[in-house]
Structure formats: structure tokens, C-alpha cells
Length: 214
Image 1 (cartoon, rainbow, N blue to C red):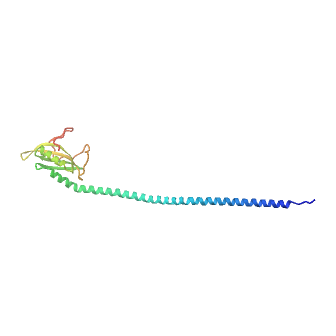
Image 2 (image 1 turned 60 degrees about the vertical axis):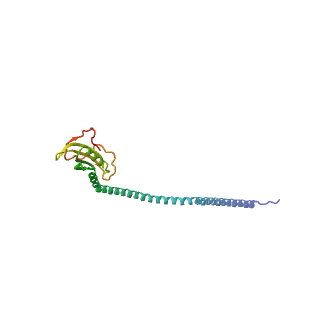
Image 3 (image 1 turned 180 degrees about the vertical axis):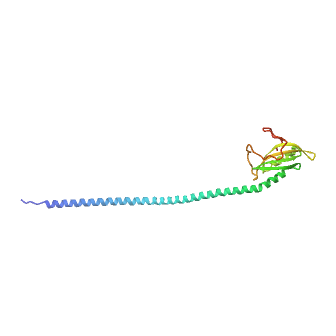
């Protein structure tokens, strides 16, 4: 009877199996690494445009911030310029306005009207004078009210007066002044006009209808 020792063969087979398993582990590990590397590359390729777009957006935001600061500065300069122009216009009106006011006041007075006093305070004027009759005074007020420099022309009082034996009408007129020649709009209540130096005559009572108004 022949006996064959199979132990060395089995050891060889087991060793071959272990080597194969080791190779499979290595191959699996390599495959996983390749897959992970592929995922990383793909992710970076997808992120690259997004990063570029993000960087561009950040640059745009910085540029917009600079423009916003410049715009705010320009807006401030524009407001300052407008205020300066308003100041210049006001100064020009105060410089030229009184000349035009007095010129229109003189032009409005007919030959039968003699102006005695002109008082102004805060754009409110009181005009005193003598007229031949009520109609003459009404004509004077109508012409004065047609001037762009006079507004709310109102007859305050009238009185009989005599000058060198001639019977005349003494009158007092109030008016608002617009040195720029622009409309003043509705007159506020309780305006305080300057008081005439020479008082007297028939004053209109509060609530009484205004007479001889142009």
C-alpha cells in the first residue's frame, strides 16, 4: 500500500488562496482610491466655475459699494449746490426786488394820488396816501394788485382830509410783497402789517365788509 503525504500540497493551496485574497484587498483599495479621486476631480471641476462666479460677484459688490459711496457724495454735493443756488436767488431777489417794488408802486399811482408813506416789515407793507376820491383810490389799488410784486392788496381805512382848501381822501392800504415776483399763495391769518405813522380816519371794524377794494 502506497501512502502519499498531501500536507505540502494543501499548504501550497492555502498559501495561494491567501495571496489571492491579499491581491483582491489591494485591488479593492486601489479601486476605492481611484473612485474617490474621480469624485474629487469631478467635484473640483464643478466647483471651479462656481468659485470663479463667486469671485466675480464679490468684485462686483466691491465696485457697487464704491459707486454707492460716490453716488452718496454726488447727492450731497447736488443738495449743497441747490442750497447755494437758492441762497444766490434769494440774495438777487433782495437786491433787485425793492427796486421793482418801488417802480411798480410809482407806476400804479395815478396823477390824482399822492403817496405819503411806505412802510415794510417782513414782506408786509403799509401804504399811506391821499386820493382825489374813492374811485381814484380804487384805480390805484387795482393797478397795484396787477403787479407781480404786490399781493393781497387791501384797503384798511379812509378818511376825509383837506389840503390847500381841496377836499381829498386819506387812505391806508396793506399789501404783501413778493420781491421775486412769484405768487405767494394764500395769505395766512393774523398778518401783522406795519402801523401807519399818521393814524386817523374810519377804520374797518373786525368782520365788517371791506370797502373800495381793487
